[in-house]
Length: 73
Image 1 (tube, rainbow, N blue to C red):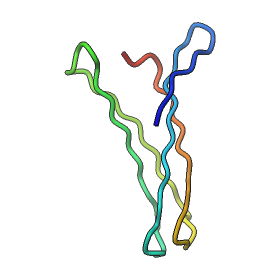
Image 2: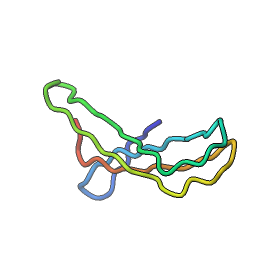
Image 3: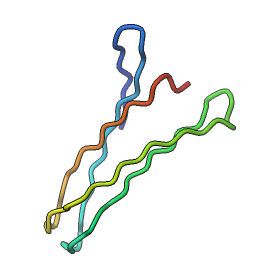
Image 4: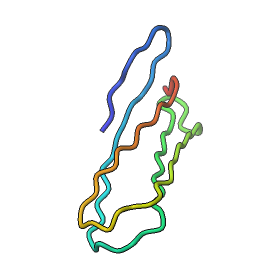
């Protein structure tokens, strides 16, 4: 999910995701990556990623990933 936010003259895209550990295994880390391609020029591609460490041993875990991608068009 994402929504557009404005802050002064800057325009940002904000997003979050939910991660579920179905098996309840001990995980060393989880890497989440988000890719965006240009609307008019599809050859331009941007990515942002984050690594989450110390994932609790639960059947369901909701971690929020927020990323600000400045002026992606």
